[in-house]
Length: 282
Image 1 (cartoon, one colour):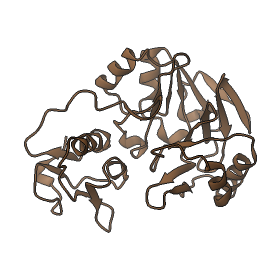
Image 2 (cartoon, helix red, strand yellow; image 1 turned 90 degrees about the vertical axis):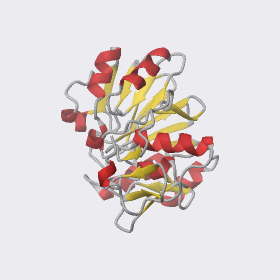
Image 3 (cartoon, helix red, strand yellow; image 1 turned 135 degrees about the horizontal axis):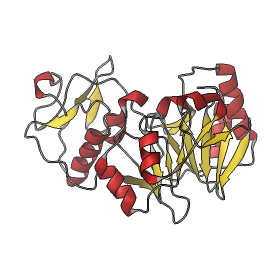
Image 4 (tube, one colour; image 1 turned 30 degrees about the horizontal axis):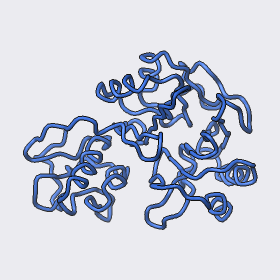
């Protein structure tokens, strides 16, 4: 929980505050960009107190997504029910409860009628697990790369789910049940493919759902600052391979209208010219 004794001095007066343990993952600012700002060195603070029910909800999402639990209230308000999972597009839910081991990476839950799946993993949270149970559980855990695994094994064990990862990153998830060996793409189940994109890590993978939802891991993200698609800048394996992977995706017959990344912002609505945007950055 947030530590009032470590409240950042730039917080605006009021009930909500951010303490000084922020790690500059940007997650809280993605949830509440009009309420939370940052210092030049990347530490978040409350720039404006919420004034509407919608803004209160955004602040709660920021608080429960923060991987260091640095956001809280002076009055120690009780967390409302149903904050996460949060539907960000039809049928696609953001899990929140981002894990510090993944440097605050997002994870995504798609509870469609069949083949319900989780992309990457949040921190283990019983309220989130209960919501997933009500939605029918999880049949697949799809890992985009080695960095954002967090509590994937615990979720998979609880739900009896299959776990997918690329062979180049499999040592990070020895509990995985299914290994992606292709250097291009493979069908996970009808309507969902894994597309290999070495770059950020050697075993990085994108998951494309119904030619509409791109779960991009640490390869692509949406920028709320430029309102455009952008490549992830942190590259551990090969910058040249990263560029080549993006070009292969642009040259493929696949299309998408939403991007849901591991790090960075996500599209808040369908963007019909994503393919043109991808071509421009490759």
